[in-house]
Length: 538
Image 1: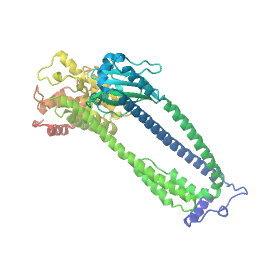
Image 2 (image 1 turned 180 degrees about the horizontal axis):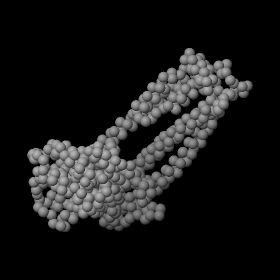
Image 3 (image 1 turned 90 degrees about the horizontal axis):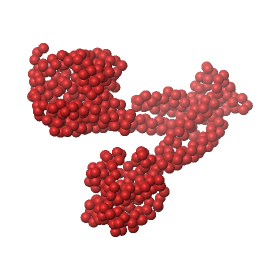
């Protein structure tokens, strides 16, 4: 080992003087040029490292190439769909759309147009479905719907229900606007759907020319591309490794070994760690006046790009996080604006939840559940706890008088409605952890500790901890806030009710945390209150 360290120091001195390594600088080399060592030779280590580096590089390159190939292919499919849909729109006589719907093939010129559409459809095997719909409130009214292999088209005048994937585009379609191509992978396979409006002589959108481009073959083509790519990379790897086998002995060992040591210490924990690793690599300052120096500089450049990339990812992650929060507040605000009674309810309850949860964490309550990440998530998702009220009629939601039993049952249904809405969001974005907390809040914040709440009648710790915290925040705000049908209670009375419901309505530990930060809670209530109610001395 001491001999190896001595050799390394000797070689570092040679490199600093920009001297190229030669066979004479190697102390222990046999006639065939092999290194004598107790363990694995340095050349073998370098070749192993090179193999790993090439493999990683190839994997990254293949992944990027595959991604670019897929993106390019999808763009080609989009171009085909858009150009085909525009061609279809130019064929349709929009002034006769209503007649086509009413009379179908009996309408003058219908069969001729249908024949032209079949010619367009048959022009490319990728065109799976071609149809013309008039979009109305009750559904899609069929103008033309061409038969496809294994699927007979709908008859003119038939009304087809809106597909779930298109519901977000309905306002635009009903208004006769343009929508971007839509990619779906559902009942009819992997399809790219393009809708192009068809205008009549008055410039009004009468219907939409639609084309479904099949992308099922794209996966097979992409796999074939990837196989070819792997074969090419494998051949390149073999050539490089054979050349490196001979070059490593005299030209690669020392400088690459230095880079290997730096790479082994390379840290990717965070942006600062990456920058520190980059700084250490720069300090190597390898000068061999050949390709190894170029490799070193490329290594530094690649590391710099990696640092820049990670920094960019960090910034974009922050931006996405802010957008998520804005999305939550916007959705919640939409609901709140319908309810004339709630005021700043979502903002106040979010603030109360944050204060209570942070206090529970300080006290060490439920340590497995209540972490910094948990607090962040429930604060972010708290504004969605009443999202289900979007499904409650305005007449009931804003009724100034007492609700009937039937009306109250409808009000109570907002918990399940909110749970279903957020559950559908989770299906679309399963990796968004805050949505799971939002669903718990929406579904269970009216459950009671004693099991007499709704909608599930859960009790005790069966109720999610986030919902138990929201229950206290929600009830407190309801007690102290003015409503059209009641005036808010004084703080002292509201606090007395919260204390009285400890162990009945509310989790005792949550109530204890609430009273531990009572002053902060009341300060928030005062800040939001239009007419502050003085707190009686306790």
